Structures are given as structure tokens and as C-alpha cells.
Image 1: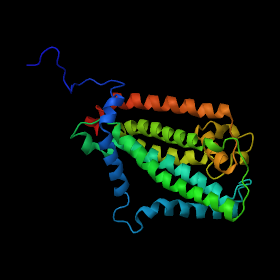
Image 2: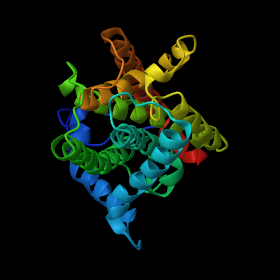
Image 3: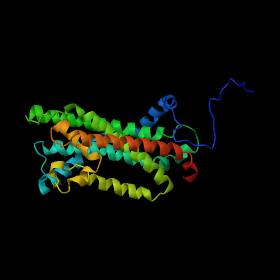
Image 4: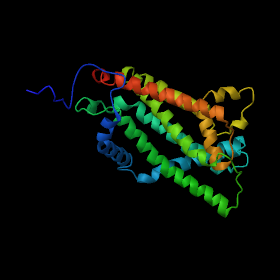
Length: 284
């Protein structure tokens, strides 16, 4: 029998709360988190012909299509930035958002067999997906920097200087956090309603055309620009390109809008995930 001064290490109950995971608890599972990241990374490229080269091959193929269709046939202006750099920077950042959202939104559907067998903080799975996609993004981003260096040093391309030069890490963090929050919310929704996975896929495809990935914001007519600006990703993509290429339109108010949206989204996502996470095990 335990004395009154002793405490249980684990307490299992039917109650759920909106905030039931402390940082200390998550930190104790850091090794499990990194093992999941390693598994996710290796699993994607096992039994493939090109292996990890797909990380670069896929965006390069997309780049070739964009340059041919939007650059040569449609004639979308990219300002003073070379078309290759402009499109590749948008592709890299969009892939980070899209792949992170897609992986996290399937958290419960893809990991039901794990959730039903062993306890661990459920939020570990979305975090592992986020870190995995960040590693993939880092490789693509490194290749983008090499391309920029080639154009500047070898081809002597003069990229416009920008006061936002060192702001690109902020854009990356905010895009990743926004994808994380949106993915977590949809992971709960799609666990309850399977057909919502199709809606999420359609939504993310439509969102791409409202995000300045394949066109600069200056290319949009003034009367329609407000529609694109409602998208919280727009200032982030413009900031990313402005910092790296000197081409983009963003101001402090637009950036604050994206930051506030991200904070509300992530906070709401964590509350919903913690409250509904255990209940969804019986549903899936």
C-alpha cells in the first residue's frame, strides 16, 4: 500500500483535457520522436530506384514544367529574378507546406494500429511528420542556395538588394507552423469523417492557386489582390522570395496578420487534438 506521500508515475482515466501534455513529458519521449523521424525518412525511399535523390528529382521536374508552361507559354513575369530561381523557390516552400499538411492530416488514419496498442503522447506523431518534412525541405533549400550562388557568381546575375534579407527563416518557421496547425485540425476531422480527406486534398490544391507560388503578387490585378491577401500564406511566400531574390511585396501589417493567424491556428489545433485524441481511438 502506498503511503500518502507517494505519487503514481502514471494515472490512467477516462477523462480528457484540453492541455494534457507538458513539455517535460514530451521531452522524455525525444528518443522515440527521433526514431519515428528516422523511420519516416527511410520508409519513403526504401525499394526505390533513385532513393533519396527523389528529394531533388521531384521538384526539378516540377521546375521544368513551370518554366515551360508559365514562363515560356503563358509568359508570367517574374520581375528581375530569373525564372528558374523564382519558380524553384516557390516550389520548395510549397512542397514543405503541402507535404507537412498531407502527412499530419492523416495522423489517426495512418497510425490507428499504434495508438490502440501502446501509450505515448499522441502529438509525437504530428511532430515527427513535421521534423521529417523539415529535413526534406532543408535538402531542397540547400540546393536552392547553390542555384542562387551559381546565378550570382557564375552568370553574374544582379539580384535586387532587400532590407528583408535575413527574414527567410521567419517565413520558413511560420509556413511549417501553419501547416502543422492545419494538419492537426484536419487529422481530427478526417478521423471522424473519412470523406473529409477528399475535401482536404481539394482544399490544398485550390489553395496553391491563391498563393504566389507560380506568380508574383504584383502580377495580380489590383481589384483582385485582396482575395489573394486573405490567404495567410501569401505574405510568407512573398517574404521568402523577397529575402532570397529581392522580388516580393510584403509589409509589417501583412506579416503580423500571418503570425496572429498561425498562433490562433496552432493553439486551437493543440486544444482540439488533446481533447479529442483519446476519444478517436474507438472511432477509427
